[in-house]
Image (tube, rainbow, N blue to C red; front, top):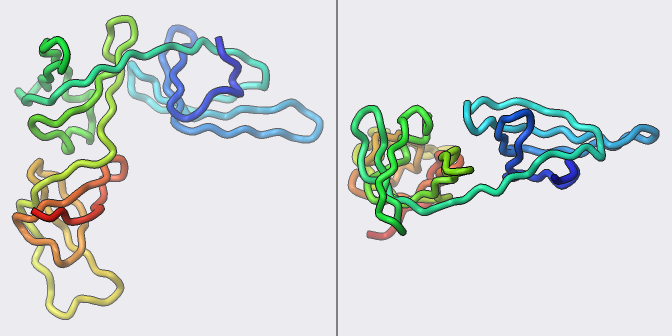
Length: 187
């Protein structure tokens, strides 16, 4: 059991039989009343996001999540297949668990699958990843004012905004948390 004052972004806990991960945390203290802790949490089984408010001194059951590195192998249309880097087992997860993050997955990419009591409940993507640019939007000559960008398509089909000098065949580094261009990588 931990005090709700110890909840921070990334902390995983259980309440009423559900597993939650803290996405955002705020601590409010008014002059005469006790502290109020407000957290935005994601239900790790359903994927829904909600806000919870606790009074100071309340305790919740923290849990230890085991993470194991896996390598993405392929998508068969319904399931994504991974290979455990330690045991060489090949766990499969439903595509819908990844939501929009599925556009970041490419073959041989390493991610971490988190499990609690043998049940895979979450995943962690790397912060950044390099992708090859397959298509670029045509740039208009003279369109250089105000740091212009154009839409590019990456090898996974993901479309992002990038500077005008990016061309098809270039390799770019992408921030996976924001889905945004970071830099061009020298090939």
